[in-house]
Every structure is written in C-alpha cells, then in structure tokens.
Length: 169
Image (cartoon, rainbow, N blue to C red; front, side, top):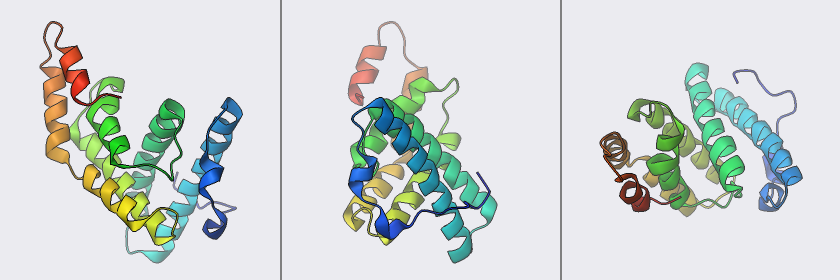
C-alpha cells in the first residue's frame, strides 16, 4: 500500500453514515471505502509530514489490519464511531487469539498506525479530538498488552476462560 491513490477521498464530504454496516453489501462497500480512506491518509501524510513513506506505509498496514479485519469484518462497527474499548478488545484479546505468534513488537506497529490514523481523522473533523485522545491512550497501553500476551502463553488447563473474561470480545 505504498502507491498514491488515483482518486483520493474528499474528506470534507465523508459522513459517519457512510460507514454504517447493516448487511453484507454494506460491509463490502465500507471495506472498499476504508481502503480508499487509508490510501488518502497515505497520500496526505507523505505530502504534509516529514515522515518517511516507508514509515507511513507501516502505519497503513496496521490501520488496514485493525479496521478491515477487526472493526469491519469481525465487529461490523462504524470506524468513525469507535471508542477505546475497540482498541482494548483488539489488542488485549482478538489480536492475541487470531495470530499464531502474537507479540508486542508487531502489535505496537499496528497500534502506532491506529493512533496516527485517529489523530489524522480528528484533524479533519471526522472524529472528535476527545475520541482520538481516548484511542491514542488505549493504543499506548503497551505494558498491559504485553502482560495479556504473556498471560495467554502461560494458560494452563481451563485457564482460557478466566483470561478471556478479563477482556471480553
């Protein structure tokens, strides 16, 4: 995802309702819109920041995974109406059970992208600054997520249920 979009999204015309999901058709439409939004993020960030395109590309990879695999496909939630619980459920549960070798290094890269993306959305008035702050705060809880990963690997017997209940999906 390092190419510039041919038709970037006009962010001033984006509305939260465009990301509502009530059917499979909606899910496919929102998924495609999400791709366009991430490509627009990449394009704008490469033009307006001093970040290297490779770093922005890594952000985009994390954003893509979080939004398209978890928020849209798993939760079927509106990506403009998220709160911190989405990040905590993703990073403290879903990511851990859905990956063969969950690790804080990979998770941190994903969360860095999510935090940057929601700051970007707030700068374009697509989410509130308070919402972006809460999401960034939850993305920064690395010690908590590291402990969740370690606790997952240490599960014995029927301990999964207790682990699961600490951060339910």
